Structures are given as structure tokens and as C-alpha cells.
Image 1 (tube, rainbow, N blue to C red):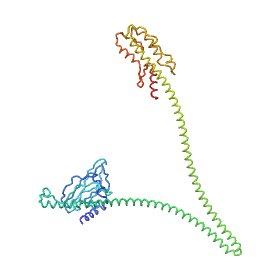
Image 2 (cartoon, rainbow, N blue to C red):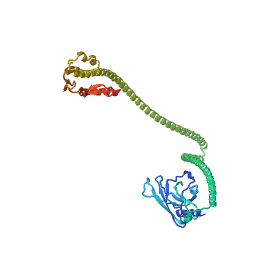
Image 3 (cartoon, rainbow, N blue to C red):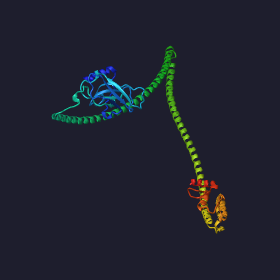
Image 4 (spheres, one colour):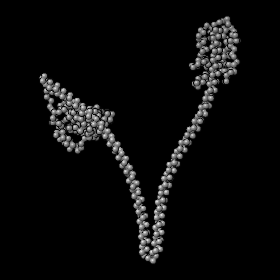
Length: 455
């Protein structure tokens, strides 16, 4: 009775009922709104201020409300009293917002049962709930309670009863969840039926439009028929006025009527032919559009095929050119390997010459370069001239160490490793095949690296 009075009083004050639903507790989100500074006891007869925080996981709406529920409630329809939740102002949705609302003492419960605050959105779903509290004055018994053995046994018995009731409530909750699922299925079917109804309604509107069009055509035909009836009436008056020509006019009237029937049948045939021609014209138009689209697709396909043929032709030419370059590169690699071997042998002989003072002339057979090394290459041997210069200069290194690349003269007492490092500084080594080139022929070295890139 008190709950009904509180609901009616709140409704009179707000002129509206809060939105509720039959959603069970398992489908609610209690962490989106948190209640702060909730007391264990509220003194009866005084106003109660409720403090809560809106997290960034909820978007407040105009029909959200905060209600007081007795502990053990199952749906949001079981509220005792409620107040509309004010909308926060000037705050972005990414930060938490502190809010408060005050319940008047007149609408609060008068018993000492346990209650809690709940934040409900405008869809009737609970977004937050507080810890339980009571409406009574706090006494010393609430601070320290001394019980006897009998009271302990009674409390244990009550606990057993409460556990039994809890199991029954769980079973009831399971049954209600199953019913809720059935209701959800029924709601889904209802929604499908609603969609079908909307479709039928749309078809009905289309049929009504067609019916109105047919009514207009029927009205036009009736007007034509009225005109023909007027003509017929004039003919009848002429028949009555001219009795002397009655037989002739009757024959003529019969002929005119037959002709009218023929004309009507011809008009109907013409209308059918016009409809057929219009239908054929529409089909021909659709066929023409389809043929245009096919023609466009064929053109695109032909263009793509032409482009693919050009690309294939270019690819074949590129492959052929690559094969030619690969063959030339293989030949060049073979010749370069031969030149490298001869060059390394020459460097070893130069080192040996620097150590042997008695050896003054180098054997011509050791420095002779095979003619095929120059003539077998397509673009000539870039190391032929340099190799010849090295061999020509080898004879002068009997008593003086002289660089075969830059003609720099080194003292006889200089270390052999320093002399070799100086000669090596004039050379470039390929990092892929370790082939050696002169720095003065850097273009040849770059072409050699480029050929590796084609591989």
C-alpha cells in the first residue's frame, strides 16, 4: 500500500511514469553507474541525498531515472519510488561525471526493510546499483551484538531456510530466464510479422493507386457512353418527330448500332494492340540497354586483351633481351675470371720480384696474355690494356718498387704489405662474385654490378 501511494505521488509530481522493462538481473550492466557515500542507515522523516557517478561507458538520456528498490527485486517494475536523473551539462562524454539527486522524506519507505538505489536508463535497463541500506535510526545494538547459544542455533536455522529459499529463487530465476528467452523468440516472430504487415501495407497502397487509375479510366468511358446515349436520344426524338421516315430510320438506326458495336470492338482491339506495342517497346528498350552494356563490356574486354597482347609482346622482348644479356654476361664473367686469375698471378710475381734482388727481368712467357681474351668478348676486354701495362712495368721492379697503376716509386726498405695495400687501393672488388676491377674503369664495374641485378 505504501509503495502504491509513493508511486502515485511521484507520478502526480512528474506527470509521467518511468520507463521500465521485464529484463532480468543477468542482462543488466551494474558497472556503468556507481553510487558514492551510501549510508548503512537513513533516519526516517528526513530527506535523502543520493550521490552517484556516470562513467564514460554510459550516455545519459532525458528519460533516465534513479529509483529506490527493496532488496530482492527482479525487474525494474518493482521500484518503490523514483526521481528523474538530471542531464549533465558542459561535460564531454569521455570523462566521469559526479551527480546527485534528493528524495523527499514524504516519498521514502516507512519500514525497516533493506533497500538500494538503482540507476535505470530510458530503455528500462539497470545501469548501476548501490549497496543495501535501511530507513531507521542507528542504535548501539548495531555496533555490538551479543547472542546466546539458542540465538545462534536459531540464526543457523534461519540461514538454512534462507539457503533453501535461495535455491528455490535460483530455480525460479532459471525458469524466468527460460520464459524470457521464449518471450524474446515471440518478440522476434512478432517483429517479422510486423515487417510482413508493413510490406503488405505498401502493396496495398500500390494497389489503391492502380485502382484509382482504373476508376479514372472507367469514369472517362462512362462520359463517352453518356455522350453516345445523348446521340441515341436525339435519334429517338427524330424518329418520333418524323414518323413518315420511321422504317427507313429504323433500318438506318440498326445499321448505325451495328457499326457502333464494330467500332467498339475495334477500339478494344486497338487498345489491346497499343498495350502490346507498349509492352514490346519496353522489352525492346530493356534489350537495347542490355546490348549496350554487353557492347561496352566487350569493348573493355577487347581493349584489355589488346593491352595484354602488347604487354606479352614486351615481356617476350624483355625476356629475349635478358637472355642475350645473360649470355653476354656469362661470357664476360668467364673472361673476367681468366683475367682475374692472371692479374692475381701477376701480383704474386710482382711481390716475388720485390723480394728477389737477383731477378731483374721477367720471363715474357709469364706476362703474355692470350689473344682470345680480347677478341672473344662482344664489347672488348676492358682489362686488356691495364694487364699489358702491368706486364710491361713488371720489368722495372727489379731494383725499385713502383706502383703499376699510378707509377709511384717506393723505397726498397718499405714493407711488402704496405706496397700491396697501395696497389689494392687502385682496385674494386665485386661483393657478389669477388671479381676485381680497376678504379679507373668504374663504369665497367657498375655495369658488372647491374648484370648481377638482372639475375
